[in-house]
Amino acid sequence: MSKNENVIKLTQVVESIFEATFAIIDSMENGERIQMKDLAQTVGLAVAMDPKLVINFVSHFVHNSDLAYVARGKNGGVIKGSKNNIVKPS
Image (cartoon, rainbow, N blue to C red; front, top):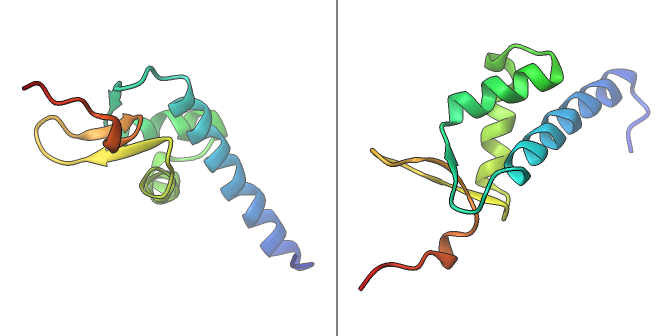
């Protein structure tokens, strides 16, 4: 672990963003969706930062987490759950 104060402070900021993102997604129901910009807005409020500053970290979290997945298009957004667990009607 780095002993550089700047690295430590920035790591703590990113950790708080990831934790806030996790808490928000974890509180959602399976299959529930939220738009990325709305999620960034909520995370920004939770960590007292401008959503423009947190959106890249929020995006990184949801794209690399097994807690949720990102879908594009008309019914897109951040969706809680696993893409593999979707049951398609016959």
